[in-house]
Length: 485
Image (cartoon, rainbow, N blue to C red; front, side):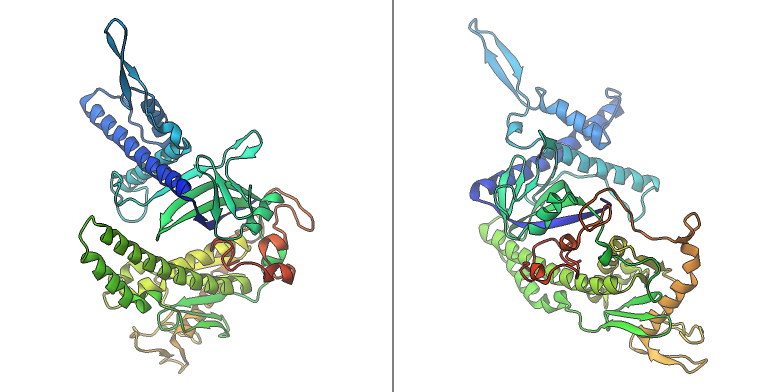
């Protein structure tokens, strides 16, 4: 087992189960806020000299919360004796037995990560923009979410898939909840020992409950993996707005061009504005306003689903057919400062496309290189390597003044990226292994007709699987991390 992936299912809970899910989400929010309260109290006590150590890491926060939930500060009652005397008896958090205790622990771990990010941001150990001190989660505005670890007790896992029925997910403290998608592929991988559930994250978004099962799975089958240095060379991938993706080789051969992206945000902008105006016209705190907010949330979820599906289609088409890809590092944050292009750049989701290409190439044993952001791929002539002056965005054809070479603007940039990758290929060699660096890893595991740690063709859904097994598969049986591969 050498890779991590997530299987995402839409839950179909009953009324009682939905109440349990909301109870666990509220407990996670309460645990996070209480841990943050303990940290602030310890910081105040340290300034006064009354407290020595401040709980800062996730482990210290768990211990502090466990000590608090059993103390009199969490709950106490007055006990009257027969002689008329009264004593204070500590009961602790009275309702803590109604939820799984892992909810509190994972909330403390989340706060520990937030405190670590705050410390790293102040000391310069964390890149990116400055991170502020964690704040309390609001009961009205905080999203409903909680996380559970998969603990094994008595040889039985706490989080199970298809225990009582094929389309069910069992979680501790919640029970067996029905799901809308088919879980056959995940159940088959778990049954063959090629997948292991590590945790489950339950969240509520756009009026639906979702569960994301983080799994440690085996490598893809050898038929789905790239052979080391078995391709036809590097392929440069240029991302743009007029043409979403243009891929080409170093010799100028185009391999892919996507000119008609869906642009879901621009298409649904009229409806989004109408729904947003409906929200502002409702009385704050009223039921009509909550319903209007829910409609707007469903609209945003639909836009995201359309965009994610298209990005996975493009990334799969690139990763499955080419083992060496080169893309440029874009300063997307700076591009968003341009008010004329900010909406189009955000709708294109270039960073998400690069992220998908990165982990999918790693799964398939391919290679991905990132060109420097200052590399002039658009202004460089792919024929004579002469660098031209600045080009306007309206100029869609590159014309070299030195040699007279002319080509499509995006195609020329893709060819230059491929040439750059070939020139820098020698710098990414592994001197100890004597060959190119690959991101593939091999773990332990065995099975029929597979190597150690690999997923069989049926498990991976590769082209070598029987046609009948793929013909009856639902469209959204797994998460976008799995069913798109």
